Length: 293
Image (cartoon, rainbow, N blue to C red):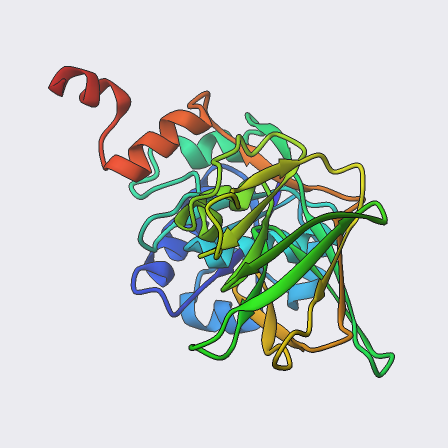
């Protein structure tokens, strides 16, 4: 098998993890693809050097080495070529990454093709501005509309399938995938959803109402989001997977729907999402929690 290593060199341990992973994969008979920039850092003999796009297109799977942010960027780059991805965590929490140093037999299983694939919902995002310009993007975690002025709230209307769905007065609104349900949406009080489910979660940020709660919606109908002008012009921005892509002004329309193609996450172990969640949230394995109780 051919593996493309995508490495966030800003992470302290990432280069060492990448060098060790490349050596182990080569030892197991796999082919390893690196960009010229990464190859210059690792100086790992036996690897093939290609530009990033060619490497992603040529590989059988991409291996992200860094944190969750690196994993998200790798997964979205892989989406175009329908390549599966897996992450090695050299960051902090690592909800999305499956492999932690030391690697054990994880890379041996990977090289031998002993893994499953879990499809993950991706959101397609289109922003239509009043001047006729458009901006398109994809989100693996979430789409966030948030106020830009600290001292004011924004009013947001949401339509589902062309019909009015809900209106919010809040600091903002999060549209999360099941993968992103353990990210910003969870911090804002949103539901935690199994990443294998096909849905999206709408979570208000500090809503000015006791009735506003996180809502889980099916992916069958597209959403349209608008700001409402009341006493002052709205002042908000749109962020996709943590990166602000454009402002949202009076007349801006944000269209959100489930993308036709899903991201493909490699699953190496039988460990469930719930076991991983418990470990990441508490720092202990579920069995350890039971023993302490």
